[in-house]
Length: 146
Length: 146
DNA sequence: TATTGTTATACTCTATAACTATA
DNA sequence: TATAGTTATAGAGTATAACAATA
Image (cartoon, chains in turn blue, brown, red, cyan):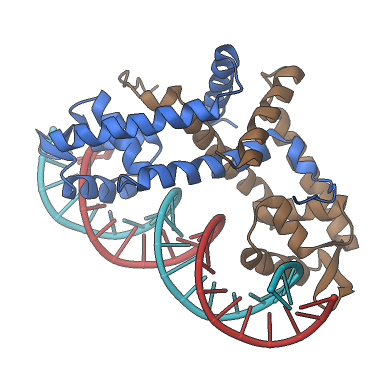
């Protein structure tokens, strides 16, 4: 075992630092998990959003997930190439997005991975604490006034 | 005002997603804040760690902050170039790191920015909730068994 | 004019591998 | 053999700008 020599890290008492470190580990874990399905974290997120919002358009996907238009385009193109989603005409400039049958199969696996991950993550938190935590974190990024 | 059309984002009920979104906003804000001091978030973090642990060596800095050796090197080099830290011989392969007088001035400003940021972040959380939150988040990245 | 989507591009962060020097 | 530091490099993720087509 490694006995870390009791170093004083003042950052560990900061919410900002803790969120940053936790996020890195979480994203790494999710990346490995979704990687087994041939997906990036962003792609898996998009699939979940489309599953719940059939016929959503691309710009709404980006807006909901905080992904810029320019970065959303190649992700949607990739999911379309993989035949996980399909497009149908909305108007001349935008198209509705829907899961294909294959996409529905894959998103079911995505949900399974997500649920398992979330369970591991919250194993030591009560439902009440979990709800408070979600409220706190969402207020941080939704206010943006930060 | 923008009336977002009530879209169903299933990710918003996930701790993982919330941590990720909050982290992005926090890091962006910190980046802007430290940018005024001519520092990146990583550099400002390193300065704080050295301030609290004089004569720490480079590998311990990286280990404490979760930065790989290969990425720590240019950060330390940059801080040395800026005359914010200085090196003194530890043994043939490593060197002690300390703040210069200039570094001490800068780190004081860093602490001021950090404190202001943390206050804004936690304005709606009680000290008890804040402590629980820190415990929860640190358990996520420290277990690593995730 | 504003919106949607696309492409090109650049910048930051992070990751691996290979190397030198030292313990 | 393991550790400390360095360099080179590659891959994500994210940012801006410019453009075409459409509303």
